[in-house]
Length: 282
Ligand code: NDP
Image (spheres, rainbow, N blue to C red):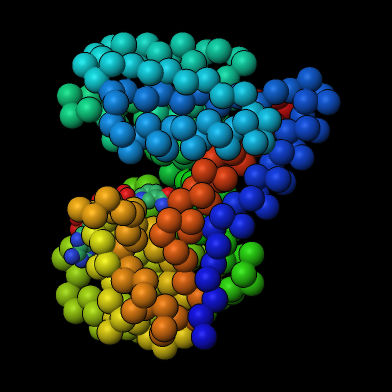
């Protein structure tokens, strides 16, 4: 019998904790503020930005939105980031990805001041994560760690397999699991015998970007399954990277899509914004 790990429920508890912290900060005259930059009108990005705005409202965080047209130049985007970097009332800056193809993502992310980099994508913050000494954790992997902690799932000595090696999910996920003394394997599109590798996992994290990629025959009985994927399919519905209906029968714990990792990512962003405000205000 599997247990569903509810990102909705756990993210609510995180946001309630953050809201309490915000109340305390406000008593000391500090109002945390998150600035979100959206370039163009990608519908999925608009939904994410709107969800972030709602979470800010819930937590009492001031949120600023900067909408740039799809044909905005690199100079326009860079100068907006620089303006927000030097604005002392702004604690966190997030540039919604992906950017239109003509813009250099790396250039923008590197421009955000590390102490305002609430996504933890700046190389300085990435370096801190590597050595296990950090202020901010990347929102999705940190949200997953929070879920595991909430469910009392201990990673010490566990065999954890992450499918996907992106800078925003797979790689930092590996670092966080390693810090908890797991034995970590990171798979990618060149991995040989993926099925066999995943079948040995006590904990599987799927971050591939392909609907129902992980099938029941890849899952060991009693495995914990964390599904990061968000794939909108032709029927208009959202699917994860895991074939949920089939895999749940073999899992001990499993996250749904939607309502799993997604809300945790946003809750961690709220936590990071408050951490940023605390650091900046001493
Ligand atoms: P990327 O496209 O950056 O990375 C996908 C990874 O999957 C790559 O490392 C790729 O390997 C690997 N991969 C692709 N095909 C295979 C295969 N056949 N076998 C093994 N590995 C494979 O994606 P992201 O990490 O940015 O996102 C992954 C998914 O998570 C997406 O659906 C995204 O929408 C979702 N997402 C959800 C979030 C949330 O809050 N829930 C947050 C962020 C992302 P290679 O490196 O070799 O190309």
